[in-house]
Length: 275
Image 1 (cartoon, rainbow, N blue to C red):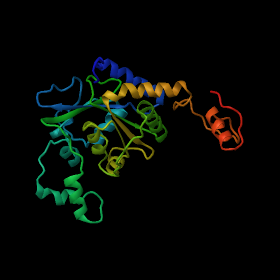
Image 2: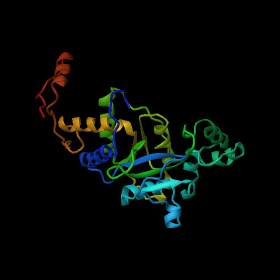
Image 3: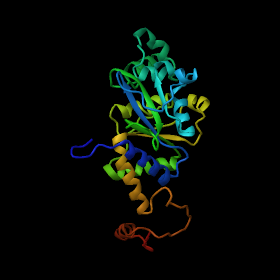
Image 4: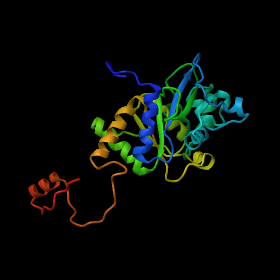
């Protein structure tokens, strides 16, 4: 939080969750995630899969329960059913002798590449004393989150990107990986990256029922106010998700600066676009 700014409350995050759903016509609620450390209280009203249901969930399945069923879930070590979040969140020890077995799972031609990737580049949380995390729909979470992850269509991703660029003047810098979407969607952002875009991986497609047209947009929770503000600006100027409409008109009206540049280049100008 920048100096002089008031800390955001749970109610603030709930309100922004409702705004995102309305402005972007989201199918599912954005997911709020809070990292839990030793001594932290488990957020009220969250389900513990193993304790409360006698079952385990993969992290992608827990995400699916939150966004589809609006469940609130806390995942500690014993609740997981997939190795990758256990490793990335530092919930289990991994020895050098494990690298060959784990590194061979990254869909690379040479197993040595997998080992090197796992040793040097595989995302791990830069935090200590972590015991797990809690997740809930952003509009109804009972905790202040560390990040927000939204499953949406590519056109809705465009709105997120436009809002981020509007607020910073910079393009997003991303590293995309086709596997381990639970890790790549969260760990880089928890480690300080502002935003990330991730495609649901094969396991999430098969076992967490992610649709083929879904993409994940993740942001640090503290970036949420400016993203919502940016999306609202885009709506007011006619570039919001709901405001854009398809057309195939030739010699269509264009913004004034288009005509200015065409005139400078000695090309034909046309009607000025007003919206």
